[in-house]
Every structure is written in structure tokens, then in C-alpha cells.
Image (cartoon, rainbow, N blue to C red; front, side, top):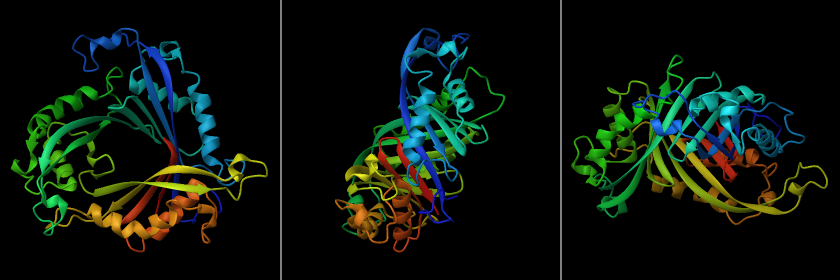
Length: 367
């Protein structure tokens, strides 16, 4: 629930920090045919990225709005134990799953909702508040498509193409092989779909005659589930800034925008740097959920999202946030809650707003 007086009491707010660390490891005990791949038995290194997501308690930070900087400092201190070190000194067989579990066990932040580890930009492990683990893998394919149901003149009615990306999530069983982080099963399940989708016209594939992002996500889901029953969600990136998610029952789309805004914190203590006029290039992600329009094949048109959100966007972009009369303060959680409230007037499908003030540092506010 809300963590300081500037947030509406009914909102659900999570604070995110993602930080890199550099570390070496080797994973002993892998079989030559193990899906984690034999080369990982050799000493090697990674630029890891570790993410912490928390629903922080009231009073966590020294002042309302100071949650992110406090959380980031605490997470940095935890990760310093691994940074520029040999992970095997702490974990005997440091698979991605084992490292994520170790980080979760070490973390003492109240309200922890998720710990995630990326060993590369294409794969990672997520641990929920209950310790349940999911593995994910990112794949890319190059395809052409057109949307036949859009109105005349809509640009997506033209044959065009995208460098699509897909992220697959799979649940890892509690008793799973501790040396297997689940990537091999994802790779094996994806391989035949990649062969069908890559360098293809999507409209030519049965079931993709109207290949919107939403239909693609459920099309992939339905073809993977028989061989990957632990699948939990499919994410399709149509571009780097928009896409769709399907979890077997519900569709969600998102649209990313950037905001260049000036601000100063009203609640920061005297002399604090946040009281000074400063600015961010924010990354704003709007999440929308709605039933699938069976004729159009989408939940909401991405173009409509941008158009309907434009009045809120113009109030924030290239503007001094601290001069907005009904914005209580300029910390990211307060701004995100304000955006969610304003946007729902014209876009009632919006149920979540993510606002990142720098890469990996920001908040999610859900209605």
C-alpha cells in the first residue's frame, strides 16, 4: 500500500533499483550434455545486473520521497559483497538461480517483492516474495506483417516489418535440478517457433492472419504450452517501446514514452541536493489491460494510447514539475500516482504506471 502521505491510500506502489556488478565464477558438476552448457565449468566472468523490487513500509526513508536513494544505497551495499570477486567464495555452484537465491537470502529490506538477476541481457532469474523462481529468455526474429482490419489510411495496414523480440517466462519447480537454471528447456521449446517466424511474413502463418502483438503473444503461448507446461507468460516486443503480454488468460499491453522534466523536491530536508532545481529524462511505461477486441485483434490501438495520453504528456514533458498546482511533490512515486490518476480519465484501461528517473531506478504504481 502507499508508503508516504503523498500517495493515495488505495494505490499499490513498488520501488525498483537495478545495479550492475562484475564477478567471476565457474560452475562445477555440470554434465557435458547439461542444458546449462559445459563451457560454464570454466572460470569466466559476467557483467551481472541485479534488481530489487519492494513495497516499502512507511518511514523507510529519512523523508517522504527519499525511498529510491535509500533503497539504492542499501542494495549497492549488498552487491558490493560480490562485485569484482569470485562468486564461488560464497556459493559452491553459482548458477544464475543459486546467485539469485543467495541475494534474496542476504537482503534485509522490508517489503521485498522480487529479486531478479540478469547474467546477460538475454536471460535471467526472478524470485518472488514467496521464493518461487521463474527463468526467462529473450529471443529475436525478423518478420514482415500487416494488419488487415485497421481503418483505411492506418500505417499498419501497409505491409511492413519489425525486428520483433519475445521474452518467455517459465516456472521452476521447487525440487528442480539446482544446476539447471531452466534456460535449456526454453531454448528447446522456442527453436521450432523461431524457424517458423524468422525471415517470414507473419500473415502467411495459420492463426496469424491478423498478427497484432496481442494475437502473436497468445499464438506463441498456445504453441509452446504443450511442450512447456511450466510457461507463465509470453511477452512480445513489436518495437522497443511497445508490446503485449499474455499469461494464458489475460492480455496486457504497454507503451513507453520519455519525459524531459525539471523538478525540485518539496519534502527534502534543508540543504539536501534534491531541493535544488534539477531534471531527468524519465522513461514512462503505461500498462493497459482490456478484453481482446475480436474484430480488430487488439485491446487498445497503440496509436490511440499515445493520442489520448497526449494532454497528460504535454503537462509533464519539457515542464517544471514542481509548478504543477495539484502535484503534492516531485518524487517519482508521487508523480507516477498523479499520472495514473490523470490518465484514467481518457484511458480507463490503464491500471499501472512505471516511472524510471534513471536506468533501473524508479517506481511502479498500480491502481
